[in-house]
Image 1: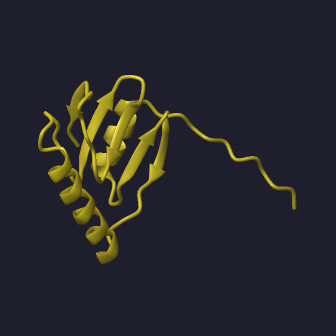
Image 2: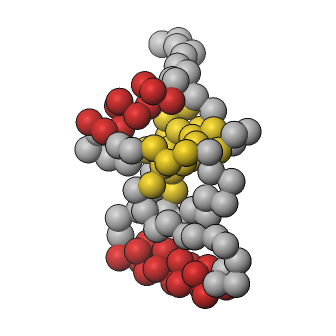
Length: 97
């Protein structure tokens, strides 16, 4: 059997948002590619809680805000980001979905 080459598809941010809203699982959008996100375990949640607590305390003197989960941001030069811990100091806009 001959292996078939994998053809990757590039998605627009609008396509990603449309698919993500209907998806049962979480994904990130990286340069047109939709990538599954990990997480959902107790240890993952403990790590994120501890990281967010440390960042919140460490950034109190600055005009920055930490978002924990399920927040999508559009950042010029970086594209659409979605992560467990985000510092949107340079965010162009928040995206729903």
